[in-house]
Length: 162
Image 1 (cartoon, helix red, strand yellow):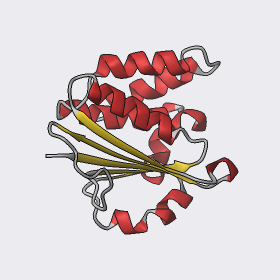
Image 2 (tube, rainbow, N blue to C red):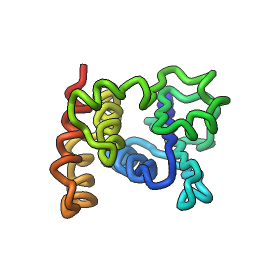
Image 3 (cartoon, one colour):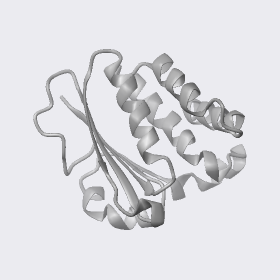
Image 4 (cartoon, rainbow, N blue to C red):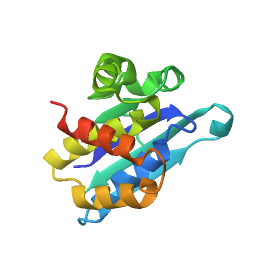
């Protein structure tokens, strides 16, 4: 049975990066993966969406209305995805984690990586991703950035959140 994820945030928040890490780490262990990016004027402050499906069988139609997991990284993304929220099984809203993020000292530039940690932990429990592959991708994509240590801290905090 397909596991469906919808990631939503403002352009520049790394939604497509998260989708890429999730998809590659699922594909790496033999799952079928579909990813539909949905963005337009995100460079000018629009909303960026990523529709992801992971399944052990062929995926016949990559778009969906009901997600198993919906990530909302901004107020604008929250507004844009109202129709999907009604059907979502699990919602991860940034507003619900503000106190946790502050207590952990996670900077806003690493919020996306914190949530990637939370999502990957959930997917690992379902045996849908390879954590080593996800970490390799993150290191290759972000390892030479000046805030790598902050991203690494945020990722580990998300993975270790109970």
